[in-house]
Image (cartoon, rainbow, N blue to C red; front, side, top):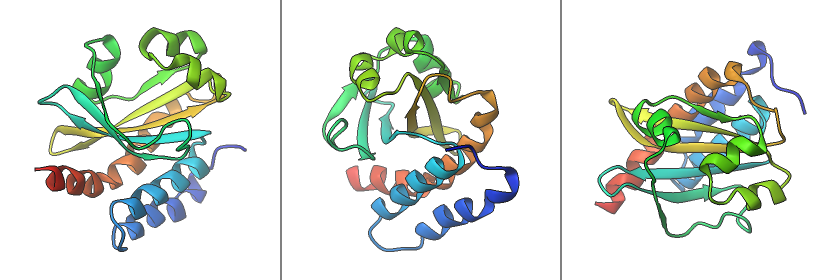
Length: 170
């Protein structure tokens, strides 16, 4: 699969926007986000995490591979350069190789077993607050800096779904 050209992007962006108006939220939005990211940027696995800044935890709300990454529980967020870049500075993180993934991810062996040695973590931000992340996994070298702005554009369309989850938890 190859990445989309700019003229082919609009239908995928519109699909995520349209999904926000559908019932079955936030699942409908996350399914559309999954499809758009797969078509436009590419991934073997996609997960959606809500960030609980006050508790320094993340919580998985969507997974394209429920066997490897089920919807359940929370994980502590460790203070690392990854945390700073993604959750505080609100910039994408690219792990280009298996070594990059090993540096920050405790589940690096699982990621590798899925045939994935590259990661693109995308912050979802609303009103200057990091709501969560969209995480894409693919083969080594798949992602590059040219993917980040487009990934953030698509991911941030889903911000209302993150806000709905957050509101339901309060």
